[in-house]
Image 1 (spheres, helix red, strand yellow):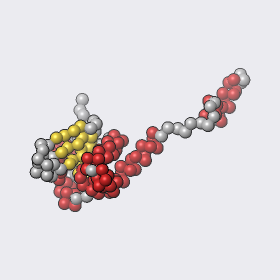
Image 2 (image 1 turned 90 degrees about the vertical axis):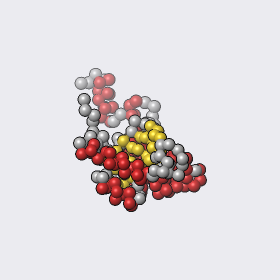
Image 3 (image 1 turned 180 degrees about the vertical axis):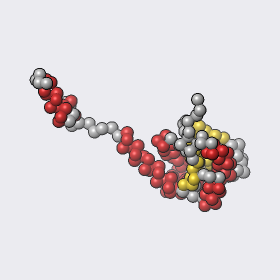
Image 4 (image 1 turned 90 degrees about the horizontal axis):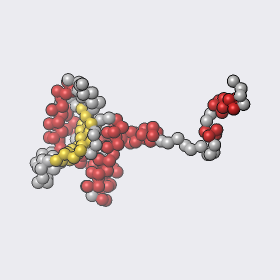
Length: 183
């Protein structure tokens, strides 16, 4: 059975987003980079699950002498640290290039890159990817959180403890008729 089409692959330039979102920048400045990364991952976990995007958050390891690694957070979200000397930009460009045939073959509907780096925007658009600024992503994530709250918000509990007060007047009337033997 063929694999269903993925609605989108979202590539997020992690440090670029942290530097652009005021809430993450504040966390970075007050609690450190690790805390800001955690908040970004948490926000993107919820967002990815709600919209169904396969999301990759990419962080530079350019200045750290460490090998690249990938951490699977959920079925739809993974975090990637680049290899020593590699920027998130070059990693994202390689992924865009590798995904282009899958978009052409309709295995993936779209590739979206979230960054406010203008040069990166032009480069990924050359590979056929869409571009989303850090501010646009922030707005979409916030709007999605609001939609999730509305969708999953529990119904307000009735002030009365009786079942009859929790149903509409027409249903209450019908129940009364049944109770009295009226058809």
